[in-house]
Length: 359
Image (cartoon, rainbow, N blue to C red; front, side):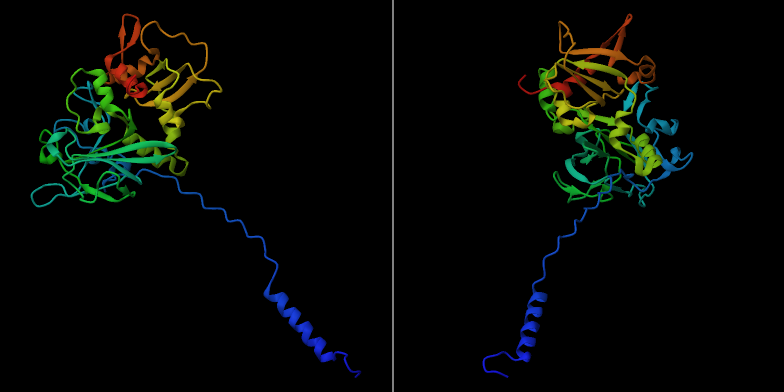
């Protein structure tokens, strides 16, 4: 072989080295896009082990009546007390287990994941006795659940605590400002919307010298309850198709009111209840559909064609007289002659939606 000419063996070694280098530094591949899993929708659970609500004819084993001579319906939601003249804000769930002294020992569980908003451990300070309020973010709505008359609240349950669905909050009981008989020990359970984040300011607006309010925004007057039993039954029936927002916005309205303000705190806090997209111009008023308990169901912003009344910012537009006859204890509206008008309670309900401190 002539001097200075590479041998065939040398060429083979070079080719092998180049091939090895190519294998060690491949052309990077485009990463495969990974679609994050869709989070499971949040559903409410029953807050105790009592499941008789879902049994045909199980109501007498689920609701706690107000006494041995009263029907189970007196422990349900709505105008069920004092011959239909007194409103009951939640449902009273029977206990299933008792200790040797006859006191209830049923654990009370959180109905959905959320954050503890309020805890009252002073049993004699409230008609609710020892109670807990939890806030939940569901279907773009901030919803509260309330657990009252507790015998005991777990020590780790404090405001701002994050809680999970099914987590034990305390023990069912009969605590209250007025004694509840042992045989009527129960869990008072509520699901609803908060009226105003400025409830103390509303109290001072309504009364010159309001009573002390140790409960802040979690005073019962500021809690607008839905029927928990009806909601749970509908959820159980619809299963995966259930939407809390759709459930609320489909409820029948007792009345429609008009609030003559360009800005409505209620609409800002509950945009999911707006019946139409935001207006291109500043609204001149809002219409709100209310159920018999004063819960806002649907909100409509109005841009024009609205005449403001000479006195006041609130106007009653329509009343469902048949529904009002079924819910007389709500007392949001009153018929004077042929005309319907907002009661003082109805006016205060709208204050919860519209009032801004300092205005």
